[in-house]
Length: 274
Image (cartoon, rainbow, N blue to C red; front, side):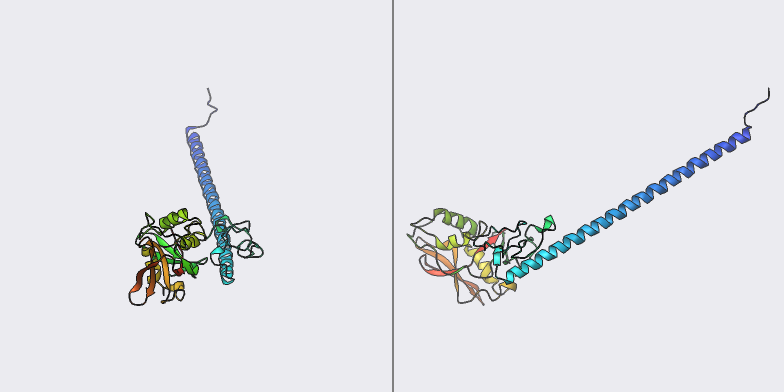
């Protein structure tokens, strides 16, 4: 019987053409996928660049507003709360020290990352941010910060009955302040410690070791000119039942230390740590 099918040579050619077609399809599919992937990567790159630019613009606006408020005298009362409110102790109620209030910085909340205060941990000794000056690392291993001005020039360590307060150390000013403010009452007002704690829960009267660091670096960066060599400063470290340690900056010995009556009036420079 006559064979109406293809000849062997024809069947071979058809198979070759089929293989070529499959190979071409695979190549086209691969090229399409690569092009699609490249396009997606390009779009993602552009989106990332746009986001980074937007974030940087927002951060710049916030930083500039913070500097303006510092020049107005807001100090450590600058608020970064997105609703324009200000919870800092003693802050003006009209929003004039708030980054995101029309009466203050006038910045619109443009990015969530800008709603929190910039980190203090990137500062070098003597540098400041938001009215807070980084001093350095104290003997207790904590990074110490202070304010650009004295909080008081005539505060008493203890204005009432003098007692020997247990547990006060030469290194842990925060714990000392916790103890003193916890004991404070109408009969024994620990004035210097309470003045610092009134700035906020993170602020405290420095221990002798922490105060030494502040006075040692009195001429460093933004701290320069804010501490007089003739001024004495209270520490939160106790000497006896009726005396506490005070310290004074010294251009030669870095700092002088003496004890005086707790009822004496002495300068107060508060600190905080992280």
